[in-house]
Amino acid sequence: MLETLVGITEAFLVGSVFLGLHRKVMARIQRRPGPPIVQEFLHTLKFMIKEGYAPLTSAEFLYWMVPVFNVIIWSAAVTISAVYRGNLLPFFALYASYKVLSHGAGVSSGSTYTKIGGVRHAIMPAGELALACSLISAYFITGHMDVSGILAWEHSHGPLIEHIPFSALAFFTLLWVDSPYSPLDPSKGYDIVEGYLTEYPGFLRGLMYVAEALKYYCELWVFQAVFLGISDPVSHLLTMGALTLLLASMCALTPILNPYQAVGFHVIIASMMFLDFLIFG
Image (cartoon, rainbow, N blue to C red):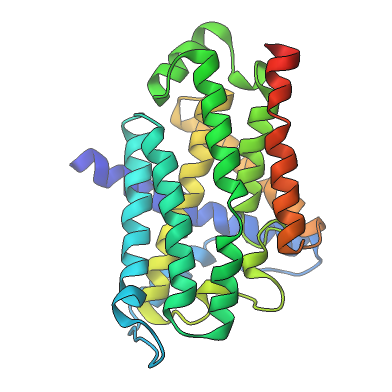
């Protein structure tokens, strides 16, 4: 229990700092000063002590439960993958549940703006497609679906990115999709700004920020473990920093796509994974 609590706390703190670094790098590239790197963490704490409320137009029970379940989902994902290095099938299921909850966050408030964000999120199934296919590719090569087994295989045969580079690219695209201000996430387009989060105030928004920090940490950690073969904490932190710099630069320099362009991009990247078995298989 203590190990789980420590792992979740570490994931939140590290995820918050790297989200702050992401925001800072984007600002610098776009010639803005940007906030301090710890701003995301401070932002979360600020909202956590504020009052939450539900709009009169909301489906109140769903509206209140979405942030709570978001935190539960990503706490479970961190525990299964990063703390105990267990099976990745629950990780995929939890990611799919997060997409459903994001849609619920959009429609539960009754706001037109959040509904647009929620509906756009609902038509973005290609993220789950890329995740599922990349994990299946890892299983076919290693014979393992648990993180510890994949790491043991990589210790003998080298990082999976050398064997299935297009599957690694698909998972990396998923990281890009879920990065802040990603051009591949039209559910938070310029016309609706914050998408399904628009109507969430106070500690409810704070819970959403906690979930976002856990998600960012967890996805980066799984990518490094599964495709780069990284297992020690120091290497994880250094690589997370490097990946954050890369993702922030890509987000800062790329214009946002519309929903259909984004889905098309995802499907093209996912279909390229067949090249792993044609060329490297």
